[in-house]
Image (cartoon, rainbow over all chains, first blue to last red; front, side, top):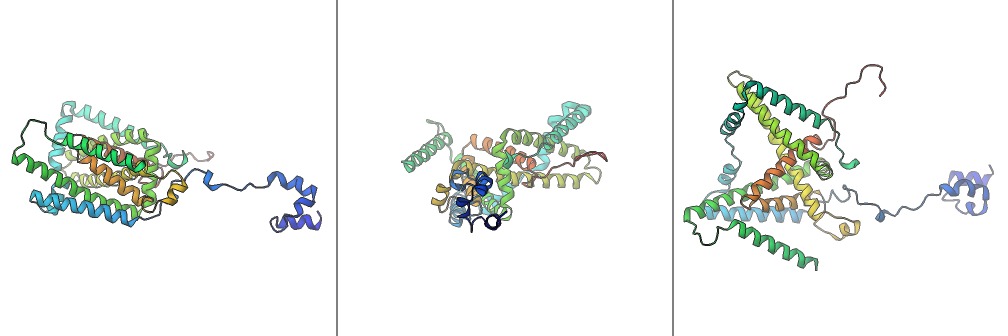
Length: 135
Length: 213
């Protein structure tokens, strides 16, 4: 390999003119010459621009909801905290009793079979790998 | 043109909501019924405010995980829904089983652990659903569109749009709770399908010694 060819192999961008002069190098390197990638032609990846934090939208949305909630609470004659407590509260004993009564007709064996079936199905479904970004 | 269409759609949605939410024509509403309706709406909107706070905090803490779960939900919605349904059924059956153990000491801590896990799954998953809904409705399709937008881009914006949209639907009587319940099922499914956005397997694969990887 001659010196110009060696120099081109080491630094193609600095010695780009050599490719026009040397047929041998053109034969070797031309087929693998990289094409410029048009980024705009590529599909938009989900993470592009995902880190942007639009605080005006966040504050606007949250304050609007707070204002509406406070207005409605005032109209209904309750405090915001009481409204949140009323909405978030769950009588788990009553819920559990309803669920327990619903499966009572199955009997202990039926319940055991149902329990094993549902949890087996859960394990089978959990074994599937998420596709998401690979799809 | 686009703004006009959006405005018309908003007005139409408001009219439909008002028609569904309003009492039937020709019937009178008593004061106590109106007060009860007002209280229910106040409770719903107050909870929405808590949801938006939780969504913003969680997205700031782990935006990438929320995004991965949202992508999974949009890519495999049926799998997420099926997994969500099975998981919710499993939670209920397991809670019933643990309730039989309450007379023994072990029942209560098991129930507490199960309920904490179920609540965390529901909250995380619902926020992933907010992100998915926001992205479907207001997500950018091209780089030009993204560059033009000042506010309406990024995970945080998508989550807020999702909360506001699903929250508005939540206020519609009958339809709202159904849609919210479906969103919860989807959420539980996507949270478990992606292991809370970490995309790790739930179970290790057993390989006998000497077998090829």
